[in-house]
Length: 416
Image 1 (cartoon, rainbow, N blue to C red):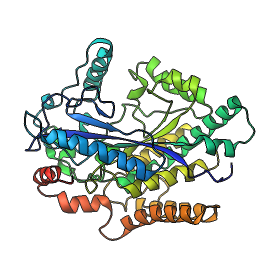
Image 2: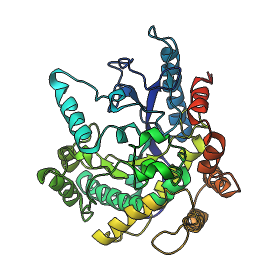
Image 3: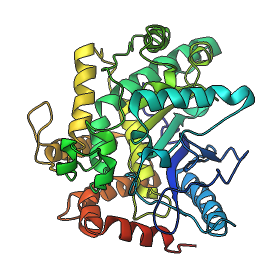
Image 4: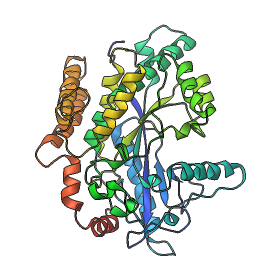
């Protein structure tokens, strides 16, 4: 597959989880304020909101859409009759007094299964892991891109090529999950109340730059292995875990990357209709951005997907899959001098990865406007390697002391 004039055309969407808190930074105990709004939804608990943009053709557009959703929510929350509420600005939760503060959302009627599923998650994983919040990046290439990449094919043959290309992209994105965790980690501060008394992690809570992406994050009780040989095998490898009772639903597979159909995350739809987009699920909330992510970071995720799409299809055996997930969790530690499985430091691996991307885009036939776009995205990441500019370092420096007090101040600050 060759780079074509539509390579940088894209469809991009964002999902963002945020905890609602009161003026003291405690988890809100009020009903979900946006019932029926598909763009301002609810996650595990009534106090965890989920912002969902539509699909847009550029990082600037999707960023603007999230800003609008964020400002709509902030305005309503500040004027609630029960008292003002705010959006907690971190991926890590605030102080937790007890699990009763985070009860599963209750649904009735045809949606009652959602409550049953949440109760299952509570029993299997506990409620505190549910309080981790993050950002999901949804991405697909345009139809124009696919027609240029595979000209002259029938719709059926083109669909097979697309599915195979997305499977390859998913495998490479999983291999590079460690890089995304390293560049986007922004949660080195975790309130001790997150851990039960006697938990050894309570004494070493600043070990991680991103707890939610680390070994203490929200993961399954087993190491999943997927079959990337073709879409049918991929779907069956996920359904196998549900048939064996290891998962209640496919959505319970907590994997850094998902291939998704259009609409709901349904395996039969994925099997029959093919891949619609890829979802990256390991982005920490950036407290220095109004919406938790910068436009330039969205740009970088965009060009990373392009870079990975053009990587040579390579088998992704069980041993490599498990090592990729372990490297991802290792990249979540705060000390970036620690090593990944290849024996090089996390930081050095990240530098090499960015150099590799630069070499790829340097050789491609891109316009001057596209090259400026690419350069801006890469330069924004390179700044994170300057002394004290890694995002996790900044957060620890600015919020490492008086986490709750400063978190409330930031949540209450007006950006409108």
